[in-house]
Image 1 (cartoon, protein in one colour):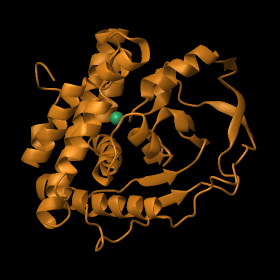
Image 2: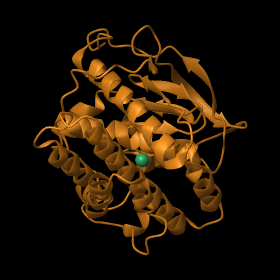
Image 3: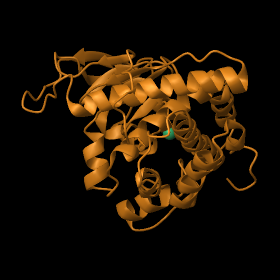
Length: 296
Ligand SMILES: [Zn+2]
Protein backbone atom coordinates (compact mmCIF):
# COMPACT_ATOMS: atom_id res chain seq x y z
CA UNK A 1 0.00 0.00 0.00
CA UNK A 2 1.09 3.54 -0.59
CA UNK A 3 0.13 5.67 2.38
CA UNK A 4 2.67 8.51 2.09
CA UNK A 5 0.04 11.17 1.54
CA UNK A 6 -2.52 9.82 3.97
CA UNK A 7 -3.33 11.90 7.03
CA UNK A 8 -3.14 10.04 10.33
CA UNK A 9 -6.30 9.56 12.36
CA UNK A 10 -6.63 11.47 15.61
CA UNK A 11 -8.99 8.85 16.99
CA UNK A 12 -6.35 6.51 18.36
CA UNK A 13 -6.14 5.85 22.08
CA UNK A 14 -2.74 4.45 22.99
CA UNK A 15 -2.95 2.40 26.17
CA UNK A 16 0.38 0.65 25.74
CA UNK A 17 2.94 1.19 28.41
CA UNK A 18 2.40 3.51 31.34
CA UNK A 19 0.62 0.76 33.29
CA UNK A 20 -2.39 1.00 31.04
CA UNK A 21 -3.02 -2.68 30.67
CA UNK A 22 -4.86 -3.54 33.86
CA UNK A 23 -5.27 -7.24 34.39
CA UNK A 24 -8.20 -8.59 36.34
CA UNK A 25 -7.68 -10.77 39.35
CA UNK A 26 -10.98 -12.53 39.19
CA UNK A 27 -14.25 -11.39 37.86
CA UNK A 28 -17.88 -12.19 38.17
CA UNK A 29 -21.16 -11.13 36.71
CA UNK A 30 -23.57 -9.81 39.26
CA UNK A 31 -21.76 -11.55 42.08
CA UNK A 32 -21.59 -14.93 40.34
CA UNK A 33 -18.15 -15.85 39.21
CA UNK A 34 -17.54 -17.19 35.72
CA UNK A 35 -15.68 -20.43 35.34
CA UNK A 36 -12.42 -20.30 33.51
CA UNK A 37 -13.91 -22.68 30.95
CA UNK A 38 -16.49 -20.08 29.98
CA UNK A 39 -13.78 -17.51 29.62
CA UNK A 40 -11.73 -19.76 27.37
CA UNK A 41 -14.76 -20.55 25.20
CA UNK A 42 -15.54 -16.85 24.97
CA UNK A 43 -11.98 -16.10 23.95
CA UNK A 44 -11.89 -18.89 21.39
CA UNK A 45 -15.22 -17.85 19.89
CA UNK A 46 -14.29 -14.23 19.50
CA UNK A 47 -10.89 -15.04 18.07
CA UNK A 48 -10.12 -13.63 14.66
CA UNK A 49 -11.98 -10.43 14.51
CA UNK A 50 -14.93 -11.29 16.63
CA UNK A 51 -17.30 -8.75 17.98
CA UNK A 52 -18.21 -8.05 21.54
CA UNK A 53 -16.97 -11.02 23.57
CA UNK A 54 -19.58 -10.25 26.25
CA UNK A 55 -22.28 -11.60 23.95
CA UNK A 56 -20.98 -15.00 24.78
CA UNK A 57 -21.38 -14.36 28.50
CA UNK A 58 -25.12 -15.07 28.16
CA UNK A 59 -26.11 -11.47 27.61
CA UNK A 60 -24.36 -10.12 30.66
CA UNK A 61 -23.56 -6.53 30.02
CA UNK A 62 -21.14 -5.74 32.80
CA UNK A 63 -18.18 -7.70 33.96
CA UNK A 64 -16.98 -6.51 37.30
CA UNK A 65 -13.57 -7.08 38.68
CA UNK A 66 -10.77 -5.64 40.69
CA UNK A 67 -8.24 -4.12 38.36
CA UNK A 68 -4.72 -5.17 39.15
CA UNK A 69 -1.50 -3.70 37.97
CA UNK A 70 -0.57 -5.80 34.99
CA UNK A 71 3.07 -6.73 34.64
CA UNK A 72 4.40 -4.69 31.76
CA UNK A 73 7.31 -5.88 29.74
CA UNK A 74 9.65 -2.94 29.45
CA UNK A 75 11.64 -4.63 26.73
CA UNK A 76 8.70 -5.02 24.36
CA UNK A 77 6.99 -1.73 24.94
CA UNK A 78 6.68 -0.17 21.49
CA UNK A 79 7.38 3.46 20.84
CA UNK A 80 4.24 5.48 20.19
CA UNK A 81 5.39 6.49 16.73
CA UNK A 82 6.91 3.32 15.43
CA UNK A 83 6.23 2.38 11.83
CA UNK A 84 3.35 0.04 12.63
CA UNK A 85 1.60 2.62 14.80
CA UNK A 86 1.87 5.26 12.09
CA UNK A 87 0.60 2.72 9.55
CA UNK A 88 -2.39 1.95 11.77
CA UNK A 89 -3.17 5.65 12.24
CA UNK A 90 -3.00 6.24 8.49
CA UNK A 91 -5.21 3.30 7.59
CA UNK A 92 -7.71 4.36 10.23
CA UNK A 93 -7.58 7.92 8.89
CA UNK A 94 -8.33 6.61 5.42
CA UNK A 95 -11.29 4.54 6.66
CA UNK A 96 -12.70 7.71 8.26
CA UNK A 97 -12.53 9.71 5.05
CA UNK A 98 -13.74 6.82 2.92
CA UNK A 99 -16.70 5.83 5.10
CA UNK A 100 -17.63 9.49 5.52
CA UNK A 101 -17.88 9.66 1.75
CA UNK A 102 -19.85 6.40 1.43
CA UNK A 103 -22.27 7.42 4.17
CA UNK A 104 -22.87 10.79 2.55
CA UNK A 105 -23.26 9.62 -1.02
CA UNK A 106 -24.93 6.22 -0.57
CA UNK A 107 -26.87 6.63 2.67
CA UNK A 108 -27.32 10.37 3.04
CA UNK A 109 -26.09 10.01 6.60
CA UNK A 110 -23.20 11.23 8.67
CA UNK A 111 -20.47 8.81 9.62
CA UNK A 112 -19.35 8.89 13.25
CA UNK A 113 -15.84 7.42 13.42
CA UNK A 114 -14.91 4.93 16.14
CA UNK A 115 -11.90 5.12 18.43
CA UNK A 116 -9.13 2.61 17.91
CA UNK A 117 -7.45 1.47 21.12
CA UNK A 118 -3.89 0.15 21.03
CA UNK A 119 -3.18 -2.08 23.99
CA UNK A 120 -0.87 -4.84 25.07
CA UNK A 121 -1.86 -7.75 27.27
CA UNK A 122 -5.25 -6.85 28.68
CA UNK A 123 -7.46 -3.79 28.86
CA UNK A 124 -10.90 -2.92 30.22
CA UNK A 125 -13.66 -2.41 27.66
CA UNK A 126 -17.43 -1.91 27.81
CA UNK A 127 -17.64 -5.56 26.67
CA UNK A 128 -15.52 -6.95 29.50
CA UNK A 129 -11.77 -7.38 29.70
CA UNK A 130 -10.11 -7.32 26.32
CA UNK A 131 -7.25 -9.80 25.99
CA UNK A 132 -4.57 -9.93 23.32
CA UNK A 133 -5.33 -13.61 22.87
CA UNK A 134 -8.78 -12.71 21.52
CA UNK A 135 -7.27 -11.08 18.49
CA UNK A 136 -8.55 -7.68 17.40
CA UNK A 137 -12.22 -7.01 18.15
CA UNK A 138 -14.87 -4.31 18.12
CA UNK A 139 -17.01 -3.47 21.13
CA UNK A 140 -20.37 -1.93 20.15
CA UNK A 141 -20.90 -0.81 23.76
CA UNK A 142 -18.15 1.80 23.63
CA UNK A 143 -17.76 1.97 19.83
CA UNK A 144 -14.08 1.16 20.04
CA UNK A 145 -11.83 -1.15 18.05
CA UNK A 146 -9.26 -2.93 20.23
CA UNK A 147 -6.02 -4.21 18.80
CA UNK A 148 -2.73 -5.47 20.13
CA UNK A 149 -0.34 -4.89 17.23
CA UNK A 150 1.53 -8.07 18.20
CA UNK A 151 -1.36 -9.82 16.45
CA UNK A 152 0.27 -8.91 13.14
CA UNK A 153 3.31 -11.03 14.02
CA UNK A 154 1.00 -13.95 14.66
CA UNK A 155 -0.86 -13.36 11.42
CA UNK A 156 2.40 -13.48 9.53
CA UNK A 157 4.28 -16.18 11.41
CA UNK A 158 1.56 -18.61 12.42
CA UNK A 159 -0.90 -18.10 9.59
CA UNK A 160 1.44 -17.10 6.79
CA UNK A 161 -0.55 -13.96 6.03
CA UNK A 162 1.83 -11.04 6.06
CA UNK A 163 1.93 -7.78 4.16
CA UNK A 164 0.57 -4.33 4.76
CA UNK A 165 -2.75 -4.88 3.04
CA UNK A 166 -3.37 -7.99 5.14
CA UNK A 167 -2.89 -5.73 8.15
CA UNK A 168 -5.17 -3.07 6.71
CA UNK A 169 -7.83 -5.73 6.09
CA UNK A 170 -7.77 -6.59 9.81
CA UNK A 171 -8.50 -2.95 10.69
CA UNK A 172 -11.06 -2.58 7.89
CA UNK A 173 -12.93 -5.69 9.08
CA UNK A 174 -13.27 -4.20 12.57
CA UNK A 175 -14.39 -0.89 11.09
CA UNK A 176 -16.93 -2.96 9.17
CA UNK A 177 -18.38 -4.03 12.52
CA UNK A 178 -18.58 -0.37 13.52
CA UNK A 179 -20.49 0.39 10.32
CA UNK A 180 -22.84 -2.50 11.15
CA UNK A 181 -23.34 -0.97 14.58
CA UNK A 182 -24.11 2.47 13.14
CA UNK A 183 -26.57 0.98 10.65
CA UNK A 184 -28.39 -0.97 13.35
CA UNK A 185 -27.39 -4.40 12.03
CA UNK A 186 -25.53 -5.37 15.21
CA UNK A 187 -28.48 -4.60 17.47
CA UNK A 188 -30.88 -6.67 15.38
CA UNK A 189 -28.48 -9.58 15.17
CA UNK A 190 -27.83 -9.54 18.93
CA UNK A 191 -31.55 -9.54 19.69
CA UNK A 192 -32.19 -12.36 17.25
CA UNK A 193 -29.30 -14.45 18.56
CA UNK A 194 -30.74 -14.43 22.06
CA UNK A 195 -33.89 -16.19 20.84
CA UNK A 196 -31.99 -18.92 19.03
CA UNK A 197 -30.25 -22.14 19.86
CA UNK A 198 -26.50 -22.18 19.66
CA UNK A 199 -26.18 -23.60 16.14
CA UNK A 200 -28.63 -21.02 14.74
CA UNK A 201 -26.93 -18.20 16.63
CA UNK A 202 -23.60 -19.29 15.20
CA UNK A 203 -25.00 -19.20 11.68
CA UNK A 204 -26.12 -15.64 12.26
CA UNK A 205 -22.65 -14.77 13.57
CA UNK A 206 -21.17 -16.14 10.37
CA UNK A 207 -23.37 -13.84 8.26
CA UNK A 208 -22.40 -10.93 10.48
CA UNK A 209 -18.68 -11.68 10.11
CA UNK A 210 -18.90 -12.22 6.36
CA UNK A 211 -20.65 -8.88 6.02
CA UNK A 212 -17.77 -7.22 7.90
CA UNK A 213 -15.40 -8.87 5.40
CA UNK A 214 -17.47 -7.54 2.50
CA UNK A 215 -17.51 -4.06 4.03
CA UNK A 216 -13.72 -4.24 4.36
CA UNK A 217 -13.64 -4.87 0.62
CA UNK A 218 -16.01 -1.96 -0.07
CA UNK A 219 -13.70 0.28 1.91
CA UNK A 220 -10.63 -0.76 -0.11
CA UNK A 221 -12.40 -0.44 -3.45
CA UNK A 222 -13.76 3.02 -2.59
CA UNK A 223 -10.43 4.20 -1.20
CA UNK A 224 -8.74 2.98 -4.38
CA UNK A 225 -11.19 4.92 -6.54
CA UNK A 226 -10.29 8.10 -4.61
CA UNK A 227 -6.56 7.41 -4.80
CA UNK A 228 -5.47 5.14 -7.64
CA UNK A 229 -2.00 4.81 -6.15
CA UNK A 230 -3.19 3.42 -2.82
CA UNK A 231 -3.11 -0.26 -3.64
CA UNK A 232 -0.01 -1.79 -5.14
CA UNK A 233 0.30 -5.00 -7.15
CA UNK A 234 -0.12 -7.96 -4.80
CA UNK A 235 -2.07 -6.07 -2.16
CA UNK A 236 -5.44 -7.60 -2.96
CA UNK A 237 -3.89 -11.06 -3.00
CA UNK A 238 -2.44 -10.39 0.47
CA UNK A 239 -5.87 -9.53 1.80
CA UNK A 240 -7.50 -12.56 0.23
CA UNK A 241 -4.74 -14.78 1.59
CA UNK A 242 -5.33 -13.40 5.08
CA UNK A 243 -9.08 -13.99 4.77
CA UNK A 244 -8.42 -17.58 3.75
CA UNK A 245 -5.94 -18.11 6.57
CA UNK A 246 -8.50 -17.30 9.25
CA UNK A 247 -11.50 -19.25 7.98
CA UNK A 248 -13.19 -21.32 10.69
CA UNK A 249 -12.61 -24.59 8.87
CA UNK A 250 -8.90 -24.04 8.47
CA UNK A 251 -8.49 -22.86 12.06
CA UNK A 252 -10.44 -25.80 13.46
CA UNK A 253 -8.47 -28.28 11.39
CA UNK A 254 -5.24 -26.75 12.65
CA UNK A 255 -6.39 -26.71 16.26
CA UNK A 256 -8.18 -30.04 16.59
CA UNK A 257 -7.62 -31.92 13.36
CA UNK A 258 -11.29 -31.96 12.32
CA UNK A 259 -14.06 -29.53 11.44
CA UNK A 260 -17.34 -28.85 13.27
CA UNK A 261 -19.46 -26.66 10.96
CA UNK A 262 -22.10 -26.02 13.66
CA UNK A 263 -19.42 -24.28 15.70
CA UNK A 264 -18.43 -21.93 12.91
CA UNK A 265 -18.82 -18.30 13.93
CA UNK A 266 -16.88 -16.45 11.22
CA UNK A 267 -17.29 -18.49 8.06
CA UNK A 268 -15.08 -20.84 6.09
CA UNK A 269 -11.98 -19.74 4.24
CA UNK A 270 -13.90 -19.95 0.97
CA UNK A 271 -16.74 -17.79 2.32
CA UNK A 272 -14.44 -15.17 3.81
CA UNK A 273 -12.46 -14.86 0.58
CA UNK A 274 -15.64 -14.73 -1.51
CA UNK A 275 -17.28 -11.94 0.54
CA UNK A 276 -14.11 -9.87 0.81
CA UNK A 277 -13.78 -10.18 -2.97
CA UNK A 278 -17.45 -9.26 -3.40
CA UNK A 279 -16.78 -5.98 -1.59
CA UNK A 280 -13.54 -5.40 -3.47
CA UNK A 281 -15.02 -5.94 -6.93
CA UNK A 282 -18.35 -4.13 -6.45
CA UNK A 283 -17.34 -1.36 -4.03
CA UNK A 284 -21.03 -1.25 -3.16
CA UNK A 285 -22.42 -1.73 0.36
CA UNK A 286 -25.73 -2.87 -1.12
CA UNK A 287 -23.93 -5.92 -2.45
CA UNK A 288 -22.94 -6.92 1.08
CA UNK A 289 -26.30 -8.30 2.22
CA UNK A 290 -25.04 -11.58 3.62
CA UNK A 291 -28.32 -11.98 5.50
CA UNK A 292 -30.38 -12.16 2.32
CA UNK A 293 -28.18 -14.74 0.64
CA UNK A 294 -29.58 -18.26 0.97
CA UNK A 295 -26.12 -19.69 1.38
CA UNK A 296 -23.80 -16.97 2.64
ZN1 LIG B 1 -15.48 -9.82 13.05
